[in-house]
Image (cartoon, rainbow, N blue to C red):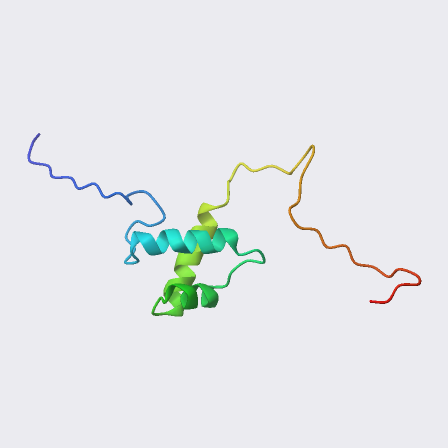
Length: 96
């Protein structure tokens, strides 16, 4: 080698690269985003993780959401299963 020094970090080329948030907090944030059924806001994420500022929580959430989208996605087709369903409507003779 000709005197070139390189450093490789485990978060290099990931959404966690150059973040001051510890990697454990990133995984906890990813878990919260993936399991919170109606979705999670940056304010909720800030409170859950104890992150100091709303802006930081917003950036973490933005990076996670961007990482969850597959650019070459297509519409669902074939048999599709849904975990939760809510069917609402008026039924004659029933209250509520």
